[in-house]
Length: 109
Image (tube, rainbow, N blue to C red; front, side):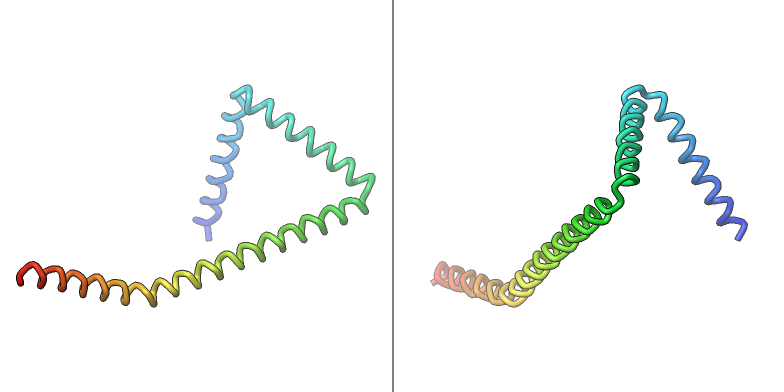
């Protein structure tokens, strides 16, 4: 149990050190300030318009559902093609072997 706490503590210290070091880089610092400003503006906007927050969240969830459905359909298609290849590959390999044997036998004749 103590080792988990030490690990977590060390991970947090490493993350904090990395954050502090990255803030010495001016473009990173400016980018972080801009991101914080945008997040603050969005939070204020949604604080004053909570119904828009739920509408936007529903839209994002629908987009995510559509994306998951598309990925599922794509994976299903790829799986079907892989299964087709598994079935046809032995047939193709056998045809190549037969063609090779015919070519070799025709050269020896």
